[in-house]
Image 1 (cartoon, helix red, strand yellow):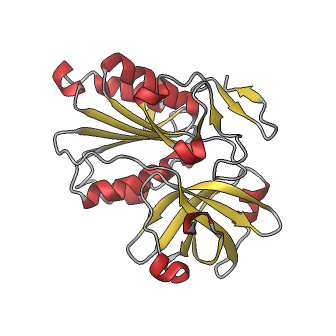
Image 2 (cartoon, one colour):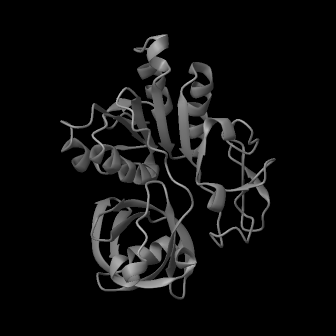
Length: 284
């Protein structure tokens, strides 16, 4: 399958987003030609840095010309190698992989995109589709400190399209002081019971944040979609490191996007992930 074949691509452009975070842009249409597959928001790619490693990365953007973007936080050996790349260097790409955010083309929906840290990346990709579909939406972006907030210039430039943008930081250095989940819970209080039924939330970020917002979706009965992150060595369902108990679902094949109904049946959600050996590790 084309999606699971590694293609060598040239890095066309690198953007310094903020401290320790860069966006890499490359073109997949030039490589695939007539076999080109347009990705969907929420999908990911496996990125191979020759001689280092291959890791999963969410797409943070794509356009009609075949340019794809990944936004990389420098947190390990492979991401550090990506940060040392220059324009015209080469990387390997497999994808697009996984499922994607289901966009409800309903202008009555009250849509929230809620991202924590680097988790805002796939939501930026989703925001482009919502704008193209002329759907109003709200953004809540959280970080530990001001320097963690991404894409603020891009989001702020679209304030005439985006209904509301709320930035929050744990230390109060930018926007509202507090967690994204707490800020969102305050937002919900302004809606009537009837309006709450129209709320649709798309989330990505630290899993404990996702779990808190999931509990709000159970309490107030609104539609909820979350992008989960797990250890992946293969990206195609072979290694099993991204399996979720007790359903046995694989984040790489059955996800990374899961809805509220499915998440309610996953006991690992908000509690455990796996390391490279497959051993479970607690989030707390």
